[in-house]
Length: 117
Image 1 (spheres, rainbow, N blue to C red):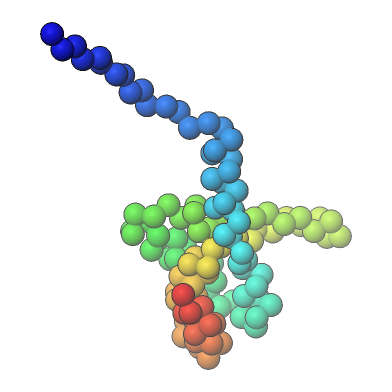
Image 2 (image 1 turned 90 degrees about the vertical axis):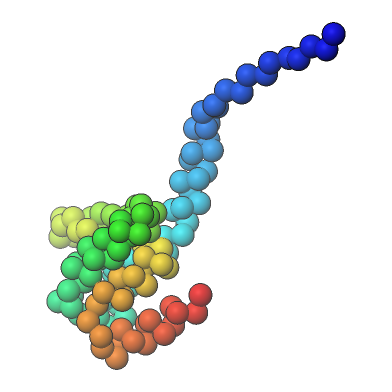
């Protein structure tokens, strides 16, 4: 008579170390910041925050968690005592942001550089 053994497969929880490693890999991809736009010649009044919100909405509509491509970064200036909000972005997030800005020669140059995927 042939017998069979029943094997139980339990769903195992991911370890805390694996989650931290995964988070570190995602964080590593966030190479761009809003200040890079200002340093590149974009004016602070060029609707950057509106473009940022639209880029995050594109992620949401595509079923992608915006946190994977956009993270807030709080910068404290010890001289003035001001706390300002900047954003860290992945290359895709940065490109989405640029795509939402009004079309100018500067925007076109940046999009051309970033289109090399």
